[in-house]
Length: 97
Image 1 (cartoon, one colour):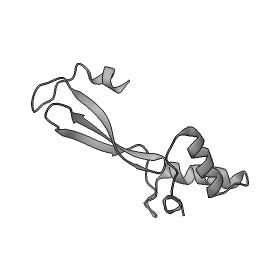
Image 2: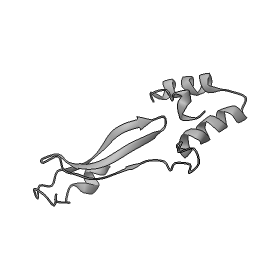
Image 3: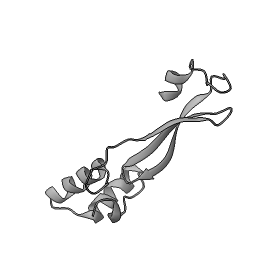
Image 4: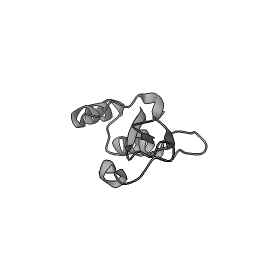
């Protein structure tokens, strides 16, 4: 999806049309996403896929997933199993506790 959106956008540095979206890191269910030129490796911007809570700096999406599992009577182990079945790396407890 991102490749088709960016295929006609030229890089400001090298003028090639090779901009792409890269996931630079995962933090539970939140990801650091960046736009990078494949030709010259210039990085335009990066952002997280989820907002952070101001007081704790933890990602909102991680807290919501954890609270959802707690509300149905399940804990972190169930959340790990859920993640594993979906093929998503398990979220460490440090991201929500």
